[in-house]
Image (tube, rainbow, N blue to C red; front, side, top):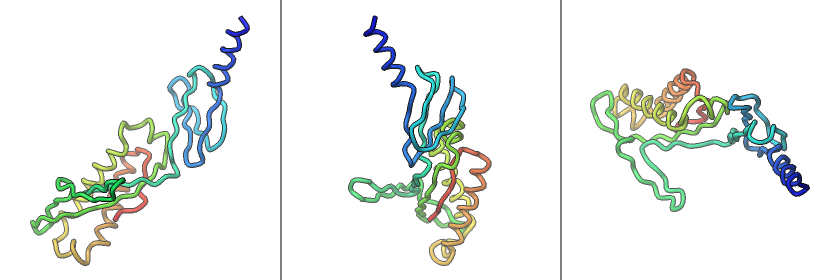
Length: 174
């Protein structure tokens, strides 16, 4: 009986606490409903799965490469043509590569309000980039209009992110 009680107490003690790293926040759910967001440190929770903690790395900056992919191990870059080929406003075809940096702005919405927020952002950015590129002439895209295009794309993506409200924010578009 003492061994059973000891095992029960060890299981109880093991399921009553959790730690959150300084680069992330913990979103606490009680019986499936979000009840708290905890910062870095050691925290207590209800045992035996009554409360669950999902961690979201909010202090990290993520990247999306559109039109190309870089192999992390070798550093080799390869073109993804179905993302990079676009039609300009003067009916030319141009290969355009974009690099987006983003971060998690609302961990609850990021974790629970959409299935794949990173993919949603990728598709949203692709759509806005194509929309902007189609309104410029090829000469402007290749020369003087780059910074203006970047700003327009960033503004359009930010506006769409406000509508979708998936807990992500754009840091930079290049």
